[in-house]
Amino acid sequence: MISPDIASAVDHLKRGFTVVFPTETVYGLGADAMNPKGVERVFALKGRPRDRPLIVHIEGLSRLEEWAEEIPEGARRLAERFWPGPLTLVLSCRREIPRLVTGGRDTVAVRVPDHPVATALLRAFGGGLAAPSANRFGRLSPTASWHVREFFGDEAGPILEGGPCSTGVESTIVGFSGDRPTLLRPGTVSARMIEEFLGLRILRAGAEEEGAPLPGSGESHYAPCTPLELLPAEALRSRLLSLTSRGDRVGVLALSEWGDLCGQREVTLLPMSRKAPEYARELYAALHALDRGGLGRILVEAPPDGEAWGAVNDRLKRASHHPGGR
Ligand code: TXA
Ligand code: MG
Image (cartoon, rainbow, N blue to C red; front, side, top):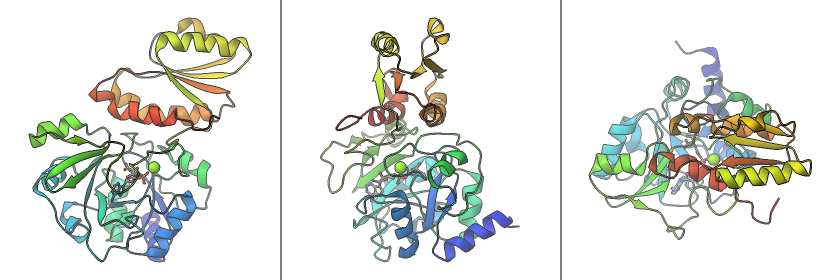
């Protein structure tokens, strides 16, 4: 039985319109990947440059050959191990895929999301959904349906409700050049997990990665509107004192005990989990909440270094990057 919500979303997609659907990572703004009119709407709604390719979401590994020209052995093994799940594979692209989806490239990014609503939608639709995160270009990714409504209202088509996203940061992206994997964007499937599973080193993409800008690189990305600073605990304390002493209202994402600050009128303190997976799950929701609080600044206590925190630290670094200052 197909629910009325899913049936209506499929109808939208088939007519070349967009729908918003939940995945385990973030909510996606989806269109029929084979329909340039729908894909064009995705770029226009997001305000996204056309050279930033989209991820094609498919129902299962058995559909991968419809999109990828060649599937290296390592890629197939990763797909078998981590799909459905927060891993995107960039593979050589079949000729018939619209180049609007791939940003003009001969490679296509594909993943199988792990969320019952996404699965039901993909099954009922029967094709691939080109879907970036359902936010305006460069802004915070949405991990709850109300985040999407704040960005788009009803403009993006039906919003399928799926509750809060369980992973909370975008998928890991891995490219293949021959059988050599390259990490293009860190996520909760870590480089080490991939290396241990494949038994070989994965390259970490450098800034000069071939072809296109790296996912999310080159400008402030995944960022709240409120200026954000990422600081170690001690530096954060002195920064906070100097900001509040001049009357600024400040939001803090805290890891340490900051009991003495809780009572301060100017400070909105959000205690974060010290476990990386939970921190990742909460991160965007916490930033969305602080961003609507009319604060002058968000200070984030820097999480530990290390592999488990790779995705969180990557997103925080991008969020705190404000070229030209704000
Ligand atoms: O978890 C996710 O991946 C979410 C959900 C909705 O699935 N999607 C997502 O999409 O984060 P988006 O568009 O915000 O980020 C996709 C990234 C882009 O930064 C893009 O540069 C990269 O994937 N990408 C897509 N196709 C590529 C390709 N052919 N080569 C290199 N990078 C590619
Ligand atoms: Mg995005």
